[in-house]
Length: 593
Image (cartoon, rainbow, N blue to C red; front, side, top):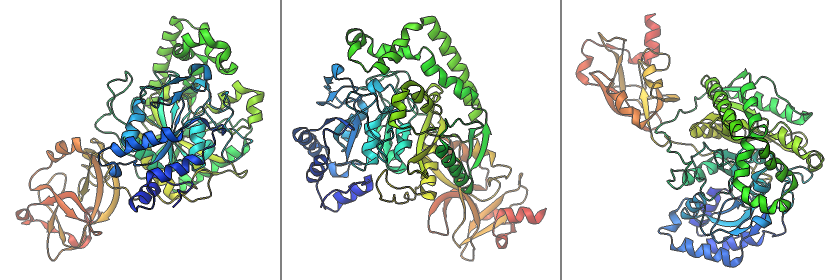
């Protein structure tokens, strides 16, 4: 059997499980389709380099059960892969990596195989995908248009269906803009969620390793492999124990004013996306994005260019003439800033970041176009700095504000080019963004990158890791007096449903606020409940608030699922009012009023 273009992680896994092919035969066939003259690549693995990785895979314990067993990927060429060259798209900078970057090491330990190092804007400086001596990477839908950068080759490899995922980096939007331009998912994590050890720095304090994939669930699967604290990375961070989940009908803030730079196709596609989101029940709130735009200006208009210079200062001093002239000119601006300027800019960054974070407290996420325009290669060549700056309108501020982001496909424009939207959340809200991304993917299915293959709907997800699913039946229902006890513990409403037949509901006497008691009974009925997901670390403190005769047990739902939920001691129903026939606590409260 021959591996198919556009395979997802599930497709690869199933093919191996059903013994329809082996990693050795499959990846040999895939690698044969990689043309080393393709501008998407800087280095394609040789047969010997592939065989070395396959032998390493064979030596891994229980290899076939690994989450990325035998799955091919490509890695942006500013991320080290042991034994392969790293160039950062500058031939004079080339060296052979002696060890894997931490993120790559985690992927290979999970069974992934690296087939190529991907092209990029030199030293990850650009959002266009054209600033490379290895050639401009054309868009996967129309070669007259840019692919976006700096992670150009990584994005195009996934969009063309050659690999199911790839790694890029993101400092100012390099993991998002190429995703939007090629109809794929771009996951930009919270800074420090993935290690940056082994990554050629752009701005080390802002850099993130990013993920490109055909679907949200594939991006999340790869993220689960890569995430984790790395003692060897000074910018790695421990994830908090709990993070807020997305509400079923979220509230997104959108810019009250959007520049489109004469791209009417992008403007029309944005409005179509907003209409679809509102049809899903999303509430859209227009807010002033001036703090975001002011913060974005600091990245290239302020002393952060000096951090780019710090990454390559010695090399630049000796090899400036061998650098891309546009990249060299941008980094050379560092000479115009002093240490005093840097501290003043940092103070301003902190002020603007706090303002942005305060604005975000009233919404579930920010929502922006991934890019305000999609330029041609000719337009970039005519004005490379100005056009590049326009592409960063809604991306440059994100890392400076310590936010995470998820770029999502939003359909094709009427000219056939992709359009994308991006969700931006506070630090460590990555899972909440992915949760909505799956809903968007389900309600607005998109094709697999630039292939003609439809993407199957995302699988049903269970209880998020680190959470308990809890059924509430009375005073903890949404809008009821004790619901705040759930909200305070970052619980999230999942759905309203019913118990299985076999329960009776009683209004307990002398309780404040009024509370029901749920009792198992052979002569019972189905009772309305709400399901909430609560972080495990808050569950104990919640249970401690529950007074006798109530407690937490296991409830059976009408569809057969079993969840934790409120139960009542049998003796407590003496003197209680049987309200089973009303079907739920809300109906009882309504009947009293």
